[in-house]
Structure formats: structure tokens, C-alpha cells
Length: 261
Image (tube, rainbow, N blue to C red; front, side, top):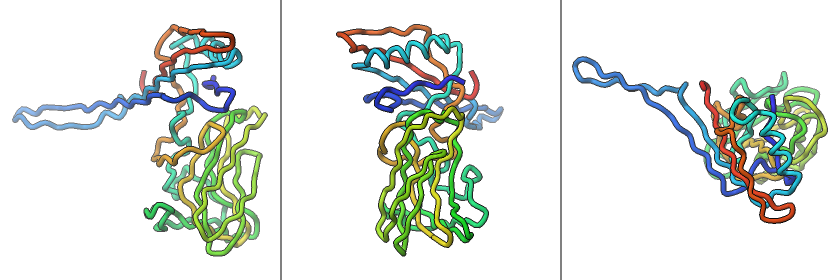
């Protein structure tokens, strides 16, 4: 499936951008006048408005090529929310979306860096490095930034994982936000993001976040829905481009996503 292109900076969009969610409630009025209301989850829709300025020739060419490939609003594509956290269940590490090593345990009820009880204790009881991770259905070749708050009673090291790439970080008794931003040249259609511990090690973690950009922004809590939107569509069949100088272009794109279109 086509993927919405990143800019040369590694970002998925420019600010300001607008994201709006529409929902619908179904109401059934009974003969006695009572009303029964239920949320119609299948009608939920998310919309984005991306306004670009100062695009280079290469960035504009990439957007034009993408627009032609999906044939306006006809084709579907994968869209990575530029204002979202791509992982699902960012504060529920016991959900099935998180893959754990065979002897890795997770325990909730830990107070996080902001004073909220939203952190977890992750321990590796095995004799080999292992940890916790989540596989996202995103293309390997884009720029991604993995970030997570980590601390440990004893000074130790953890490894941040982004597909086949890894980086080792020092962990102390204080909460610190560890980040790993990288781009790969692979062609895989899914990427594993996670945290790996040494044998016998235990750490407290909070705020797992993956973003399709070159650096970490403020943390966004997620539930069952992460920031990966498959089967998104453009909202129109026209791509209006404004050029104000050599290598200086602008355009606006509206994107929509819903379970039923």
C-alpha cells in the first residue's frame, strides 16, 4: 500500500496543522417517549488538514508523485499521524499488542515522572537479553524516533530497538527520557520498536512513544488506536500548488480516515 511521504526534514507535516475527529450517536425513541442512545463506532472519522509552505522542488515532486499514484481520492494509503503517537496502548504494557520475551515480566502500579501512577516495572528473568516491544505496520525506510522514560534502582543499561538498529543507553535512579531517532534503507513493511534488558535486569518505564519524525515531541497517551492509519484517503481530486520563488512551493492536502467509506 502507498505511504504518505515524509518531508526532507523527516517530518510528516508542518505546523500549524489541524486534526479533527467526527463521531455519531444513534438514537432510538421508544413508543413511551424514552430514548436509547448508542455510539456508532463504525461511523467515526478522522480528518487532517496539512498546509505546506516553503517546500523544496524535491519535496513537491514527492507529493505530486504520491498524489498521482493514489489518483486523488480514489486510492487508499497508509498515513502516519504527524501529531500522534504511533504505538497502541502506550500505558498498558500487559495488552497483547506488546510482545514480551519468554521470561520478561511487567508489573503496573508504578508512579511515573509526572507523579501519575502510569509507569511499569519490566524485569528480565532470563539468561539472555530480552525485553518488550511492539511491531508497527509502517515502512522501514522512513525516519522514526522512539522515546521512553526509564529509571532503575541500580545503575544499568538498556538497548532501544528500531527494527535491525540498536543503541545502548545508560539508566540511573532518576527518570530520564531516552530517545533513538534513525532512518533505515530497508524495504520491510513493518518495524519492531522496543526496549531490551540485560539478563537479570529490571527497570521502570513510562510513556512509550514512536513518531515518524527526526526527534521526540511531547508525550501523547494512546489506547487501542495508535497513530498508524491504514486505508486513509485524500479528500479531493485536486492538488493546488502555489509557487512564490525558485524552490519555494506551497500546497494544502486534506486527508480522511474511517472504517467504512
